[in-house]
Length: 273
Image (cartoon, rainbow, N blue to C red; front, top):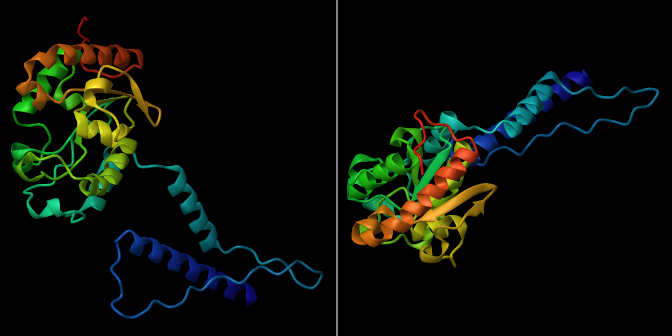
C-alpha cells in the first residue's frame, strides 16, 4: 500500500509539473481567479533499514524523467524548430509595432540553409506580402546572392531583426529590437548556419554590439556564438549610394570563399572569383 501511494503521489507531481510548464509557455490559460492547488511532491524515500525497503521510483516518474532528458538533449532544428518558434510568436503583441502592421514577416528560405542573411526590418512591400526582401532592395539582394555567390533565394534563409514594419520605415527603437531578439536568437539556433551575412547597421548592432558602425565593421570577419559573421551594406543603402557596390561586392566574395571552405551546400557550381 505504501508503495502504491508513493507512485500515485509521484504521478500527481509529474502531471502538476507538466501543467505548470505548459502554463508558463502560454499553452494553458490561467484558471481565472481560482488558485491552483499546492504542489504535491512524493515523500522522500526512507533510509534503508533491516525492517524497511527503499521506495522504488514509479514507472510514471521514470517515464517523465526520460521525457525531460530527451527534451533537454534534443533541440528542435530545421523546419520543425522554425515552426515551433513561429507558433510561440503567435499574433505578436509584444511591442507597439503590432498596431500598424499588415503581416508578421517571420522569414523565408531553406530551413536547412548554410547561409543566413539577416536584415533590418520589413518595408512596405514586405509588410503587404509577409515575406522579407521582396521590394527593390530584395531584388538587388537576389542579384547579389546569385551573381556573386551562385546561390538562389530559395537556397539561403532570409530573416529580419524586426518582424513588423516600423512606421514610415524608420529605424527600430531599442524596445522593439529587445522584443524581437529572443525570436531571432532561436531562429538562428534552429537554422544552425555555417555563415551569417548581416545587412546594415541595425542588424549589425543587434547581433554584434551597439558600439559598431557598418562603415568600419563591413568587410571584416566577426563571430557570433561560434558562427562567422560578415557585415556589409544594406541593399536599400546601395540603391541610394551606388558607390558602395564595389565594397559590397568584395564583402560577398569573402563570404563566398568562407562558404566554400566550410562546405556550404549549393545546387549549382560556385562562381569563379
